[in-house]
Each structure stands twice: as structure tokens, then as C-alpha cells.
Image (cartoon, rainbow, N blue to C red; front, side):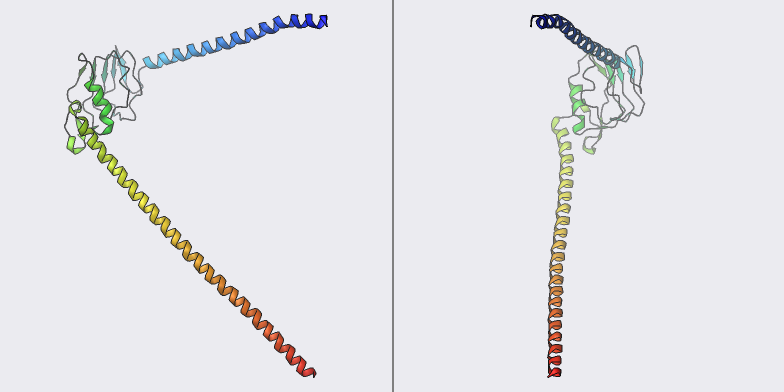
Length: 234
């Protein structure tokens, strides 16, 4: 018993050392992964977008036929000047410009801005931009027709929400029409099913009656034959 106790005591420190080394290895692995994430994340945030050209803090994305879906998802964090004019932008994705704390000038003119619900972010961003930020004054709506030519920053929230309501009304109307068509189709299928079941029931009754008549006629015929044979034998 003393020998086994001493052997277990000798094994315990080695087991403890192995456990400590394993935990230290896992900790180092997690730290390495964290460093790689921070490194590549920082490089990505400072990288120039593929569709733009960058030089001395200026990011030039003008005249690239960019749309609201093809616009870069991020810009270098140190961007001082951002050129987005003469593209096909209708909206700016939410939070796209929020991290550009070093931005001093931006150009947004020459785009077909659609002043509906999607313009709310750009309108809000322009209205709260610092006074030191220089931007082109002609950021105007191209649609809807009721707001064409209006400056985005001068739009009232009611005007924008009114255009949103038209969109929601169209969606609601389309949903109601689709629901009506669905109900009509279901009703037609139900009527067709009822007609089929009734016809099937009628055919089943006719088949049953025909079968019973056949059995009755057969029995009568056999009975007549029996009577005929009986009379003949007498």
C-alpha cells in the first residue's frame, strides 16, 4: 500500500506539468489567433477598395458606375477626402460613413438619389456632419417625381415618410391581391374536389346497384333452370 501511494505521488507532479503545458499551449494558440484577427482586420480597414483609387488620404470612387449594391462596404479609416460623385447611387448603405472620423470633404453629386425610406440614413448623416466637412451642395433627389430636384438635407421627415407610405401601400395592395387569388384558387380546388367526390359516390352506387342486379338476375336464372329441370324429371 505504501509503494502504490508513493508511485501515485510521483505521477501526480508529471500529470500536473502536462496539464499546465496543455493549458499554456491553448492560451498561446488563442492569443495568436487574436493577433492575426487584429492584424488582418487592421489591414482590411486601411486597404484601398478595389473599385477606387487612393492617394494621400483621398479615396476617389467617382465615375465608376457604382450602384448602392456595388459600392465598397468600407473605406480606409484614415480617409480625408471621399469622392463618390457621378455614379449610379440611389442610396447609401446604413453606417457606411459613420467610421470616417478623419473625413474633411465628400462629393455626392451626380447620382440619381431616390428619396424614399432608403435616403433617411444619408439625410441624417448630412444633417449632423461637422461644419468643417466640405461637401458639394447639389445632393438632390431624382425621384419620386414629387421630390425631384429637392435637396436631400432640406427634406422633412414627413416628406420622406410619405413616399415610404406609398411604397408600403403598393406592397399591401399586392399582398391583398395575392391573398385574394390564393383564396379563389383554394375555393376552386375545394369545389372541384366536392364535385369529384359526389360523382365518385354516384358512380359507386350505380356500380353497386348493377352488381346487385346482376347477382339477382343470375339467381333468378338459376332458379328457372332448376324449376325446368325439376319439371322435366317429373
